[in-house]
Image (cartoon, rainbow, N blue to C red):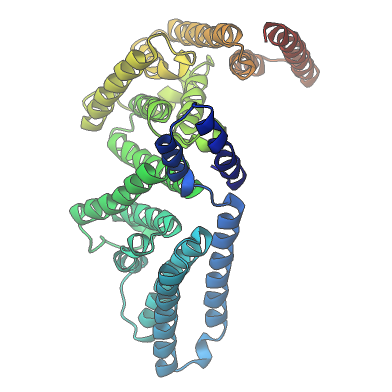
Length: 440
């Protein structure tokens, strides 16, 4: 909740109590509920950006004067940076704990100075090791920063750092990080993940609508997407099974969408719903990639083995998708308006089963996409939601454009197609706005 909205709520509650709309206890509970969420998002963002720039500036100055510093100077400088950042963070924790922007910034500064100090010590005494070893030590030493202050900004960077360490520990990623393995075992990395997941769960419970919690939500969505993508690629790489890979991604994006709709959301705006938006975008892009009659050609070009659904990861994703879909339908008590997104795994599965009959597979995919988009338009008109209508129209237009561009038409014809489609969009929007205004 923004600071202005919180002030409005605090001003209105006394009159609500007098009118008997809410009790005194409920009024106090409402104020306490949103008390930690009234910090200005711009203030927190600029504070984080400022401390990040200061930290990067210090690192740049040290790099420029590195050759002129002796061993003793480098060691003292490393200790000074680390102790100074810690002292500043503890001062903020002790005397300015209510200043969310300062608390978040000090946590990020402490995190950056921990990495800088490690780099200085490693370079000074030639401790050896790889980049992955350095990142692993940095991850361990910065583990408690988020909990001590607490600082969602530090937890955000820790999530990103953990993701790099996890990916670098995989055998297929050795060449990227120039390392055999991290000294952190997979079980240790899993325990470290539980630490920042626990911190996120605590912030989510206490300050769900706070912008700092939303920042952690975006970090969680991006990190899980990165790790999940690599794991799915590795699960299908030995057989180079592209159809199986598409099936795994279809399940993954549908799960993302369902999680975003039911659990992981922080408002109605797009930037407040990372799981839902990522899942929807990924699912629609994936299913549209199967629309073209040329899709079978590029799938067969890279798919060297027949599709076999024997992957443990695939079974787990299918089970999770089924459970979430049942819970979602029970919660909504009706077919979802964006049923096309939920049905993407089924559409991709049907395509894979029909892949030996290319035209049948393409007709199945195209019919499914058109029906799903048509359902969006119908629900949008019924619910008086112009955005949902536009989504359905965009999907249908993309299907038409994909087939149109595959055809052998010149640029003039293709340009006219864009113009006609644009005019149809504008006309339909104008008509629906008048109709919705009349309904309202």
